[in-house]
Amino acid sequence: MSKQSIKRLSRQQLQEALQELGQPKFRAQQVYEWVYGKHAASFDEMTNLPKALRETLAESYELSFPEVAHKALSSDGTEKYVVRFADGACVETVGIPSANGQRLTVCFSTQAGCSMACSFCATGKQGLTRNLTCGEMVDQAALVGRQMGRRVTNVVAMGQGEPFANFDAVRAALEIMNDPKALGIAARQITVSTCGILSGIRRFSEIPEQFTLAVSLHSADQATRDKLMPSMAHQTLPALRQAIVSYTAKTNRRVTLEYILLAGENDSDAHLEALTEFARGLLCHVNLIPLNAVDGSSFKPSDHATVGKWVRALEKAGVQATVRRSKGGDIAGACGQLKNEMTAPYRP
Image 1 (cartoon, rainbow, N blue to C red):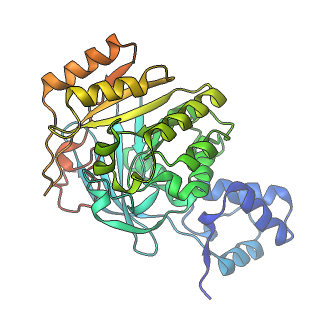
Image 2: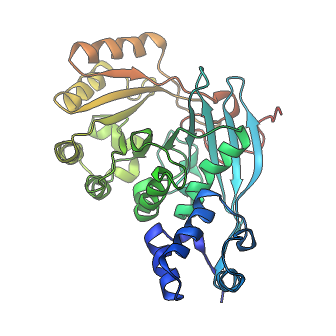
Image 3: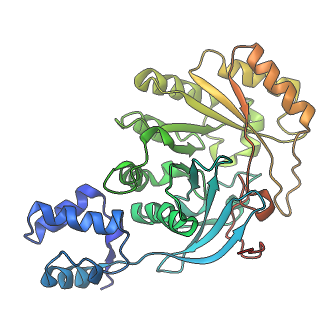
């Protein structure tokens, strides 16, 4: 029988597993810190545990740390990694340093591949391989921190996959990333981006931590959104808006509405008016995202004049709007480009 990865276990589950082995509570804390704080690659590294316990854990669980299958360095300092896990599954993870050097943001994946099939996204064309474990998500941030030699200050679940399609593991990963005994990242510096799965938004509103929610909207016109995001076509925009209203009422936390501007697809005056009406009165801000190039895609980015017009119109209507300045575009490491690419140039 194959062994289960210990990184499938949340902190609570790890405590329960050690309790079943007859171990005192402090042993669970020690194992937790080795796995999620020190990111041990083997049980032999856990030198403050009795040898018998280390042997028992090794007999019951698999423990490994992912490897870098490929690495690419952008001219803007962004680093993209193809991360390979023990079973061979790969994801892309991106490290984004701030210009002033004070922040390091990691864009991590929550699934290997993605089943959402958004028409403008490279990841969606790959399909879904499997969900990631909570530990595999934490490991991505730890790996980038090691590679770049800096403390990770921010994380965003905006890599491959739909986070709310893997909700329990994502929640466990966020809690571990937030834990001072692990990565110690402030809750408000942890962001989850979803296509807008209603049940996930409702569950996310129940989480006590001040994590940030971003919703990939991409059109406030139903027909256009259904075309761009076919997997969400069963869901109406009024239902999504109501879910956001309920979320903000319960949490008093602002939601980010993400909107990729696609020339001739979702950037007309009618689309602008629809977005304005959708966002008006919400506790939100709109993040406009110029399209990043994807090989083989027929979509084109909206021009600068259109982007500027949208920002001005939204702000005039009382809707806060910003333009995302994507990084890593020259190594296919920007929003919508992640596809386990191993051909981008590596410049050490």
